[in-house]
Length: 283
Image 1 (cartoon, rainbow, N blue to C red):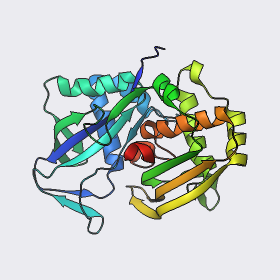
Image 2 (tube, rainbow, N blue to C red; image 1 turned 90 degrees about the vertical axis):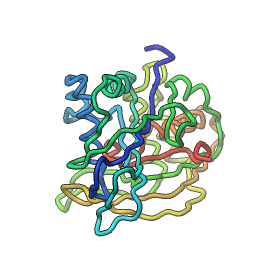
Image 3 (cartoon, one colour; image 1 turned 135 degrees about the vertical axis):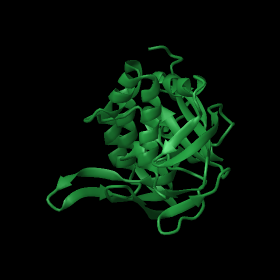
């Protein structure tokens, strides 16, 4: 794998083509639209991305943003009302196939359920939009510094699943450091080049013994209403203290904090949940 292999975060500026009513929770529809866009160019890749039993999917999908305040779980949009979606691709082939669809001369329209949106612009260049950018696996690792504090902003509802029980699925909705960084570590080790793999055992031991929550700000829960069932998650800001002076562990956790911008955190990151960024990167 090339040291220059890129990972991408790209933002679609959208406008409805007519008066539409959309659900305030549109992550599942955006997920379907993303896969359909890939399918139009590369059906095999789309099928692979949708295959069951995959522990880490190499893309994420944001909620539909810029909607305004919903009423009864729905939002009315007039033609020309700009909103936006953000996708990430942790494999360059995904980004290339997605962009090929809109470079092919076909109508630049994205459908979210019954609603059609004109794709006015796609922004990927860093600085062109707060959620646009690109990097490489090696750059994320090379730019990390052993900072003793890491602050993350959880921008869409975030939650962690801990298995099915007789009474239902156990869900955690707190920014505890172990599930937050374990989620990022799992995604990193499943998708990053072999040379950059992190030793899971020692890093988890450091997490459990030496990483604490130092500050929580604007923390609250929010409910998403998917087609099949509601899903609760937390949003807000958390600052983590990396207390033991272990440069290697601090470097790895700072790398994972930067990676959160592309990978997301927790469950259902391909349906709008777990959109996270390092707080220093958001300022």
